[in-house]
Amino acid sequence: MKETKANIITKNHSIGIYQNEAFDNGFYQYFKDIENNKISQVLNNNERNVKIESISYRQLNSWEKEDLLTVQREGREWRRFTIIDAIWVKIIKELREFGMSREQVKTAKKCLEFESEKCGVAMPMLEFYTAFVIGAKMPVMLLVFKDGAAAPCSLTQYKVAKEVVRVDNHIQISLNDLLQEMFPDVDLKPSIKNDAPLGVNEMELLAYLSLGKFESITVKFNNGKMEQFEGVQRIKAKKRIQEIMQEHKYQNITIQEEDGNITAIFQTIKKKFSKGSNPK
Image (tube, rainbow, N blue to C red; front, side, top):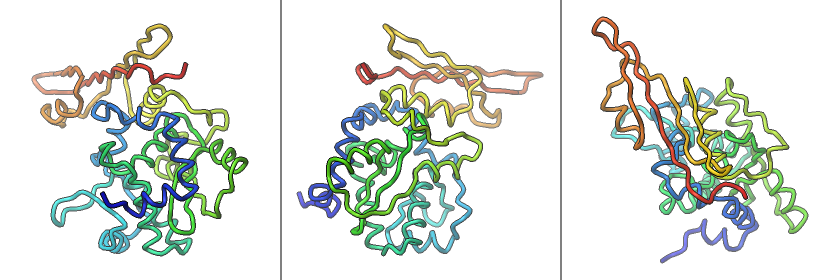
């Protein structure tokens, strides 16, 4: 199998240090049961249709033609951005404003797409750290080196790397700031005390709760470890029942009627956590 430029960079670049840290912190555990990973569903769902007002339609067209941007759409229909799409678009804008070439940005994109086929999402490294920013308010920065190689890392990982090895000159982009701009009503101000990695289950739950709107929440524990989560959401009555049924594998749906008309739909979402992914 021919190695991609991103894979070669990973082997010979200090970026590999940060990827190894990600793996140690539960990277593969996060993607182990991707079909039932609630925060991953939220981050990769284009139904939110995240708006990007600071970037023109002309810029988006140009970046898509240059393979800097990949958005799933049919024909000439309007682009619908997932949260991960929108973060990447903002990163492109930052890198271009720093003067990075299209080839350097392409390299950054390939690095963030590392293990995408295995994990089943577009940008696994970016998604993994985005979930920690949302769920734990962990201070996370994206490091982009002169050749375009890119890696997200926590503040602690960055400090340790600087003490242990030489870190090449690079650009730093705050993932916390990018997300706070996108969600001004959600407090995502980084907390230094939360820089230590949480268990993947705990992080997934907190991130999901940060972006979801729940009427009630129940978390069941077994021997001090999270075993199951249930959250009740109020859904717009106009939404079709068939669409709601396809959204989650484990759920209950309650319909409220008045004078023969549906006035509310309540969706109870259930999630069983993976064993062994909480911190000891």
